Amino acid sequence: MEMRAPKGSFDIYPDAKERWQDTVYWHHAENVFRHLASVYNFKEIRTPMFEHLELFQKGVGEGSDIVSKEMYNFLDKGGRELALRPEGTAGVIRAYVENRLYTSSKSSKLYYIAPMFRYERQQSGRYRQFHQFGAESIGLSSPLADVEIIELAWTLYKKLGLQNLQLFINCVGDHESRKAYTQALKDFLDPKFNELSSDSKIRYQKNMLRILDSKDLADQKLLEGCPNILEFLDDNRRAHFETVLKKLDELGIKYQVDPKLVRGLDYYDSTVFEIIAMKDHERGLTIGGGGRYDGLIESYSGPKTPAVGFGTGVERIIQTLIEQEANISLSTPLVAYIIPLEESQHQLAYILAHTLRSHDIACDVDLTGRKLKASLPYASSQGAEFALILGEDEMKDGKIKIKNLVTRQEENVDKNSVINFLSKNKS
Ligand code: HAM
Image (cartoon, rainbow, N blue to C red):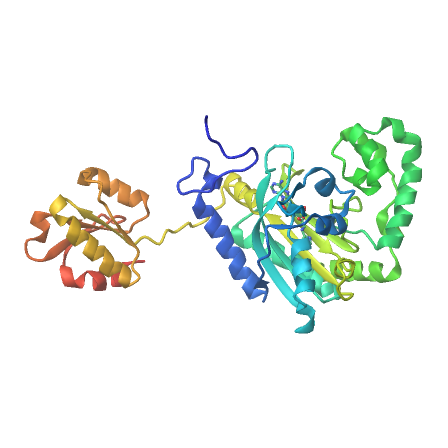
């Protein structure tokens, strides 16, 4: 039997055949996100990979595609109904309530880097196990908190080197205004029901607003001239949304208001946004999205607490970086590659490696017995800056030949001065 990773999952490993699966890209993206999150004073939270199914049914919504079609749910041996998390927000909010984080501070700014699971149809940029960077700002109702989240996402993409991104933004309103809007949309679509795509017919029954999201061209045509959700907002939300847009203008973050943007998760009740990679002015992959969800914490039996956040797909970030040929420096930390030319020098090579490593100088030893002609290119391919060549001739008077693999210059350095030499010369 041929053993393969389950459909929709993949490995991340060094020198991967598919470049986006190469660990170096993942480290690069993770480092940038971690650093930026701390610059914005977000602290890391880690929650379980599985939760009670009910958490997602209640939060993300039973009528959503994620919960109704894409969940990995199962009964454990104790008969509990559990689910692999399809997204990060529900678990973070559950942890916030369970650990009573609200008692220690008025606001909590939390971030995560974590795998998520959705049983989705396989297509480009869609996986069944994928990874998200996410950030949740809990406790602030100010529109500035929305702006901070959007700014964090936007800055992340800029720092990573992504280009041609477009921010789409909307306000979906609270339960009441959404109910009124849903009715208006229903009235508008009623006479056109038979012409809707089969998917939209199902959404018409289960989750009307999601019809707005239909990719079907005929559906999009039918939606032309449909009621605008922004006209159904109450005064507070309208003012909130206007302030968000004004502050984005002030920060120079360009956006497009898209009244048809509703997102696929039911917990949003105000600002929503998505960031999309544009291809020849057409919408390509959605890189990230988020919004405000002021009612979720209360629905999990926590105190009434406003919150806003975003999540972004790491696979999509890396694939887009590669596709856009972004100029990223993926430096490997390897400083030295030690090449003993004869087996009699293996022991010495290993002791040298031990000494370098104890001084925090990253190095490796070639114990394969291959010829120098082959080991030098290998050392370069590993990103080493220097090759340390140990051979009978080279070692006669206690010296080691050090070759700079970038400049090709060679120097014989006293055995006892190697650490000094490398510390001084490494970039
Ligand atoms: P979401 O839009 O469902 O939002 O997912 C966020 C991002 O995860 C998407 O924009 C996409 O980049 C990535 N993603 C989603 N599904 C897949 C998949 N099957 N394969 C690869 N990437 C995928 C949320 O999950 C919300 N929790 C975001 C949020 C946080 N809202 C408030 N706080």
